[in-house]
Image (cartoon, rainbow, N blue to C red):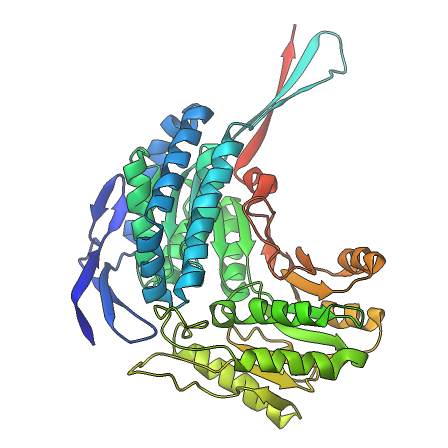
Length: 485
């Protein structure tokens, strides 16, 4: 199906909107309806190199721009995003599929990352260090690392732009960003607003294309790029890490996860049930930090499972533009295939379906990739879903008996991005938080995120932090100066 208002989207390089060097384009379609939304410039490695060159040439001027001026420009961009929230949210919903209410929240977060970092730009301080000799004075400066290349995912295509570019720009770095091929439209609209805010040419550059491997390799190996920030799969992250070794550039990686959700027998079960539903089924389960497996203390297992299943059955699935819809489609057919494979494997190994369990039938003539919100009981550790990230709306529930067992099961994974647990025991909050091997912990909180909270994982879930004061550090170098007097 093709709309009468198919957009043409170009790349933004050195302050100009350009087609791909080859003239090639690719299609972007609505995952709920199949409607053709846009033809987008299909750039290649040489286009990426041109963007890197532009950022490299713009770096000296931007790095020397006073922090106060950089802060004002970022705040102006944030205000423009807020003013265009409804347009941006609608674009986000039609290309990603998430409900419009969720899209509005994401656009608000998109602005907030610029606001937070605009304020942080004013607080990039150095130090005066007591010298070891009376005729020395020791100072440190913090200066921008240089050109930053960013690769963002399709599941949060707006907020991930400013979560990466916000601190980079505030620090004085110039940037190139490549969005996921499935969701470049809202990113392009954000870049239009960055340009409207007055960011100088070459400071922000946008490259789009289907050759993700070629562009990624250019970002990782080009010596003019001094920092690579990537959000995506652990497999691709490892490949990029290997490539960056040749130029010893800085990296920050937010990779895969397999978040556990622990429910202790003293928890508020109603709160925990609502929270796990919010965590798992937001964006159709297509979030890096969403719950992947639920571990429930045996005494409350049945009661909790019934509450969760009842809530899951009440979730309305459909087109995200429908204000009554609570969960949209998966991004493509591969999401349906993986969810189906995980459910079938779990059933074959003894799991019972409490809710859902198959592709969803939705009202209207929708041709998208819909799957029912699914809850599985009697999950066991030999099931694929207990080890592989589903990235879909399937929630397995497994029993545990003791706090020690719960922690052991939760940590039994190579991943360590986010973990959640619910309890009324204050002592347990500290014990479990300290022992869980994860970078982000939600204790009685299903959404431990925000522009002020450091975000990132441990183990194979990545390295470095985004957001908060810690997020700025990855874009700054410390220079020591010893002065003889």
